[in-house]
Structure formats: structure tokens, C-alpha cells
Image (cartoon, rainbow, N blue to C red; front, side, top):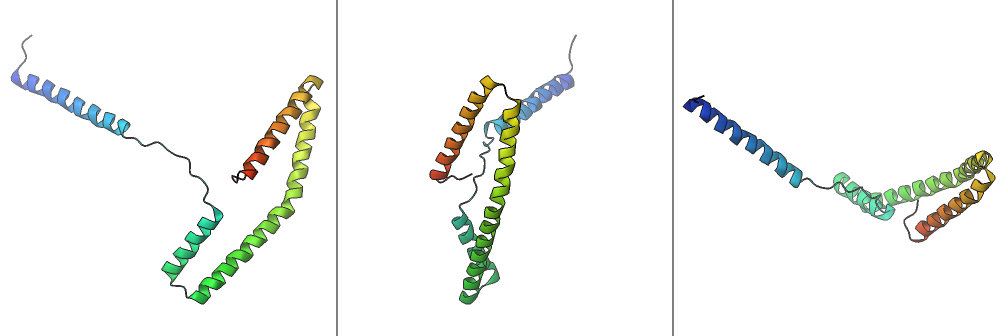
Length: 134
């Protein structure tokens, strides 16, 4: 079978086009960035950013900045109060969960469960001490 010049040119064009598409795809894959999980900002850094943004965009006076800081302090105190008042309710729910789990476990599983809970508590304590919080 003899191919015409037009058919040969079409095939060469298709090979070139497929190489171009494959090269672009490969380049995109090669340069793809890795997704890094966002870390929560430090509360003080977050506050400084917020105050700075309010100052620049709203053109706050020094008196207004002082009042804004007082509002943020009050809000933080109220939020912490609310968290503290809710903590006993969460603790009670957690204790009920532990009791229900202990009921379904066989005696030989209880010791391993207690060991797992102790390890988790130590990990959480270590995280709190190292400043990462939970």
C-alpha cells in the first residue's frame, strides 16, 4: 500500500501533536507541587495580623486600636470561660463512652484497652507540654 504525501504529512502531524500533548502533560506532572497541610496560626500572630489589617484598611486611630484590643481581650476571656464550662460535660460524655466500651470487651481485652488509653493520655500530655495543644 502506497501512501500519498498528504497521508504521510497527516501522520507526521499526528505524531508531533501527540508528542506535544504528552510532553505538556509530563511537564505538568513533573512540576506539580506537593500539598502541605496548613497549620493553625499561633493565636498571638493571628491577632497581630487582624489588628494590623484593621489598622491599615479601616484607618483606625490609636484610641480605636486600644478599644479593639480591649474587645479582643474580652472576647478571648469569654470564649475561654465557655470552653471551661463545657469541659465537664465533655468529660462526662467521654467517661460514659469508656464505660460502654469496657462493657463490650472481654476480660483479656480490658488490660490492653487500659494500656491503649494510658498511652493516648501520655501522648496528649506530651503534646500539651510541647506547646502543640490539641
